[in-house]
Length: 238
Image 1 (spheres, rainbow, N blue to C red):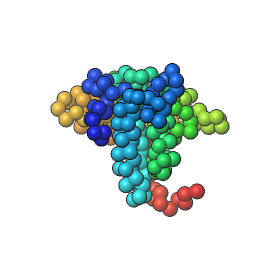
Image 2: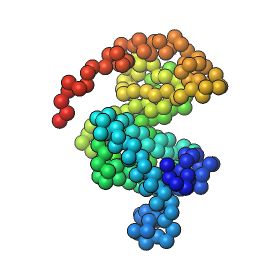
Image 3: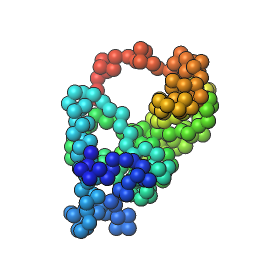
Image 4: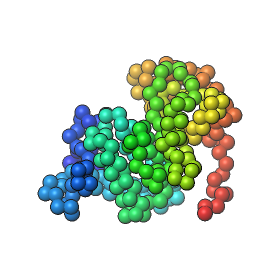
């Protein structure tokens, strides 16, 4: 997206790009803030502008988008985690404000999956608290402890709670186990198949998810599959 291709790879090992945020001063390293070196900030804003243009196409066609930017913040794998939690939160908030206020984008469901509470940008910037799970092959438990952690992070000032979701997993948690444990995950998303390594074909292979388990998940009375989704167009938006 950016013309310098500095953010073409998300991985720390593949790019020198870092969030251009001065945590000591609490400022973006921009020309507007008096920083002589502001190329990284300029490139970042070009990225956001380019992304906004694509998202606006969905909005113009009345298509809502489940938007999960900057995932797995505390993993240490990606450039958006290299500068620490304060720089990460500043970027997440900047993205939210730029998209919603500057660009007028209002068709996004904001999903945060930064993992640890120290990286949480705040209730006003998120709709869903997600959890990316690196679990053992064929472990189909409810992931109750991780649900409690996500629920704790998503507690709002009004006493309510954000929706909680398994935003990435290797083995699919059993809906029946989740209900039994009261781990009220809203949805799960399986890691994509590698296409070459059978041990990393999370859906088409059986190393992580046996075929019998996949059938049981989708046949569960607690799973809402596409054919059971009501026509949401009949519900008025208020």
